[in-house]
Image: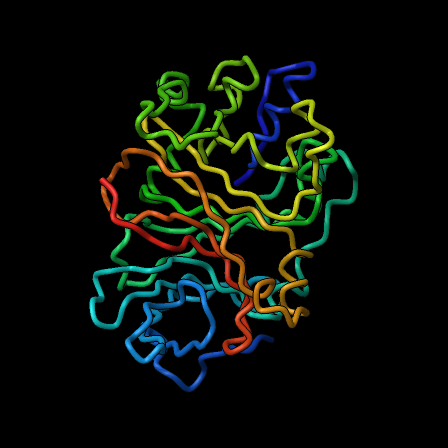
Length: 320
């Protein structure tokens, strides 16, 4: 549940706030709901190329939930020859999921207050999941959120958590150790380059900028949508997509692509394969906890074969 809580004031508060982000058709009807072979002739990490240039991967889906007029469900892609080797983990949104979404609150103040609880879904991952990720939180933000001029566009947040739901639910200010756990930042070796935490950016206590039942957000300071706040207006581009991470009590606990609805819809309408299927590299740390398969990039795509929008962590690599 995305609730913005901050005691910061002044220009740095704006940067602080951006850290605190905080009938339908089933395209596989008639097939095995747990496993679908993917044969894809395009480039990209949909699978590992066989010697004949084809694709040979398996896609496992999680249990779908209703979003808008459609469905959202998690998926994991694995190499058919080695099913303990995941290639990609993501969320698939059916075409109709982007229609019939809840509208923005009636007032601008409500829209920017972080009251998004009615638009949050917890998605189970497939049983066949050889990654360290345990579940996905999907948030729909019809009016975006703070700061104005940056993230105040209709968009989805996709939180891929590496902790159980119970751990995420226990991130509450009523915890007597809340402040200490929020301020317990991951060690340098676990921090990807270019990422800055909300507390440091705001010059505020970590507890003041940690989102309950979510964590402390970190952003890539190179992100184009942040350049206006960072005194680099020439480098500013409106928000379409970005990649955040989140920490709690000494470790990173989620990876978070944020994507605007308009950006997803543009992929469905494009005939350019590079637009339809986009892979965006992300910085990687020297160490990870727990050890497992982590992304080298994230993916934003429209799959015309399955009639689904895909937002995923991809190019997964074993890391310790």
